[in-house]
Image (cartoon, rainbow, N blue to C red; front, top):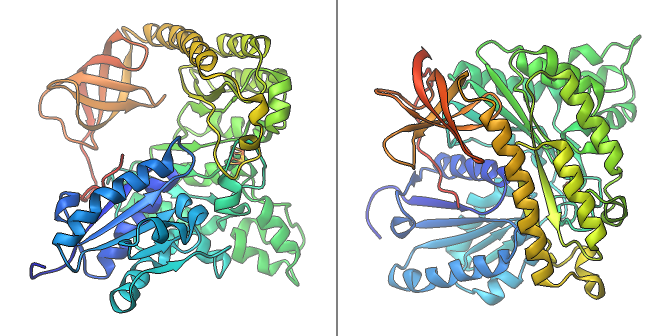
Length: 487
Ligand code: SF4
């Protein structure tokens, strides 16, 4: 083992929630004196932050772990940790299948990762999976130091867990019940980010629109309303005028008004809980970006009911119409599952119809695959044959790409505000995102990641725009940080 500080490498699987947890893990390891490794092969400590939502998540993890086995044999002292959703689900199974893993931790004890690795150095493999965090506060990795992936844009967790029971989803079993982070804590974190030069924040939760519901319940259990302030902030703490709870819209407004924050995004709102107040806040707060990710999942009421989604296609479209009417130039994206157990051709045609009517700017479309531990995984007698799902997937892709291309073509000739993210992977150009979250590849000299520019849109494709730099509106104001790897 070379002298000097130990080097760590965090590999992330899955969603933004996991990527943000990885930022916390990186911060935690750095607070223990470790430094980032530039590649996995150079790391003394490798952490896999896993996800069990994506297809073949376990095969990918065990494949990755298999590759590390020989490396670890060559390098005594190297340590491997596995955390996240799949670890929460598989628990001891991970060290049974890969006994060269040193530490396994779940979704409720991210903050213990460094201590578990230390413990494993003395006593061999350690598995610690909790059913819930020791305190509500510890559910939020917010208390941990963070090593942000992008210095000018940050994820901020506002809620963990989920109280819904969608038949295809493993989240409630691995992330636990829905818990909102106290209002003032979110606002304070964003204030600190803004002070460090962050321009854009994305508020993260499994169902952001039900934010605050549990805060009100917790407050009602307190002996008097003064305790409410501790959970929500002064505005909701008045003893003579106690409000039910801070709504998500209140949080959006508070964050959007913090000086220095120019873009606020959020993901994901559940369609059944999308309230007019949220649309109103999107419409009136300048910093809230005109982009709504509203997961549809299916356009068939029959399928939606068996998924336990809690809305019909018409109800979904009504809410979408209200959002489009309220928020000018709104971009809308979605998630759709194709081939859910029992989905007939008639059901699927309804999905195509809703997708066409919704005029999505883009969609994450997935072919159903059973996730062990979910209700739908047991409905084998209703599984849709793979070739049928593949053919439907292709038809849906064409419908979504058609509306995306139309929406993008309408932007050609317009000047858009772009937050520059870095050099484009497609040639010598720069890439960034518009306020509608559209990816733009731009020609332009001397740009820097984190700058805000104006770009003239010259070309449209279903998944991106091309443009030319018009002018730099603002140079970056952040301090530079080192990225965490993701895949
Ligand atoms: S709302 Fe449904 S899909 Fe989303 S996290 Fe909760 S259970 Fe999963």
